[in-house]
Length: 225
Image 1 (tube, helix red, strand yellow):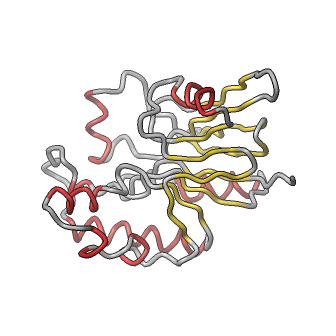
Image 2: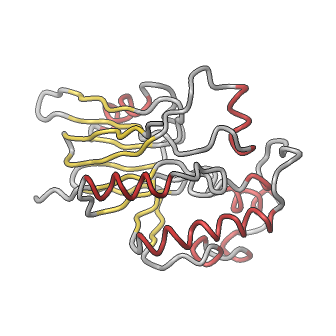
């Protein structure tokens, strides 16, 4: 089976993203001749409907939507076809509706319709290509979360979610080697969306993205400077 070089967009949490993220992703993907794009989840922050206390200087729901829309128009024009993993922040509208006793399927618009994304931005909890499983990684926490999940699932594995611990693990196995990667994030630590992290993160966020060449060849590309 021919391997397709895959570029992995990390947690962005629009509009809490780094302003330089778009140019960094474009340069990195072009340099590595990426043929397939996967968004690892948490594309949008949805801060205003989180279950945690909102920051006092946060945008309201309409302002956050407008800021996110402005950014996503640029991304969807550059990358018209993306395989998206559903992240916990992406699910916040559905969870809020369910909390109120509403069925999201009946009362909420689909994600692509809300953010005017093309139908070729496809959403699933996980994607499996060329013996590599991609998912947001909720539940696969900590520095060794992606490695532990790869061993447990018996497949090479790529995740996001854990912002502070990006990197790649080579995992020798009896019949075939595995590889695991956490792709970090491209969030701006100085924006209110990331302020909660100051209470929990003991190390800085790992800024960058991922490149998957095959099930045994992956690399984390750090964003420097």
